[in-house]
Length: 254
Ligand code: ADP
Ligand code: MG
Image (cartoon, rainbow, N blue to C red; front, side):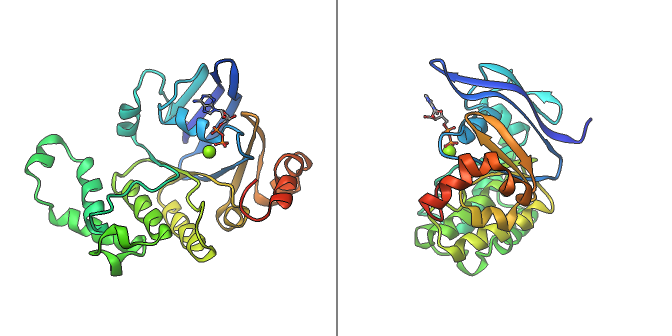
């Protein structure tokens, strides 16, 4: 094994002839925290859709830990160990954070375990640990409905981690959050990055600066450049297509 969690070769995704992803090459090491940025329409979400099997490549290959994902369904790919957090939180609002996390833990059990499963003491410890990690221990037993948007985002990241994926894909986790909530989500991802491989798609440059090690810039469905934050920020092509535009548009969007 190469130590690569993800390798993507010559990936193209066409929608009626329009190439949302265009001959894209990409790789990511086991244990890495990678941030993917790019202007609206660059193909970031489509890229994630292909990794999770939601969309099949028109051309090219996606390898997860050396395994070609082509034959696998979205559901099977999740089972292989790729977990995804979508842009909008998908927590059960009537349930508490603790119950939401218990459900996510139960999802990874086998059918018999799920049928007969009282939650084991190990599982209760896992849930308690996750509540600490996501900073929601004090709100563990109130309805998730009452959480702020940022707290819901953190809860959903916790639910993702509860399923013990090998690779976490996180799409725009701080869209619409306050600065304070944004920083908390950043701290959470940094903490999780100590023991997980994580890919984060993001627009918000403050946030990217907070968490980024290696940044990949997508533009028109291909990798425009890759490097640390300084390299990327000073690349004239990036300034042209992304950061330049951002200054016109203000803080959040590109
Ligand atoms: P990003 O997440 O970087 O904003 P997307 O991956 O959502 O970009 O979209 C890339 C391009 O592909 C956009 O121009 C979008 O309109 C187009 N696109 C995305 N999904 C579809 C689809 N299912 N059918 C047709 N066009 C699509
Ligand atoms: Mg998107």
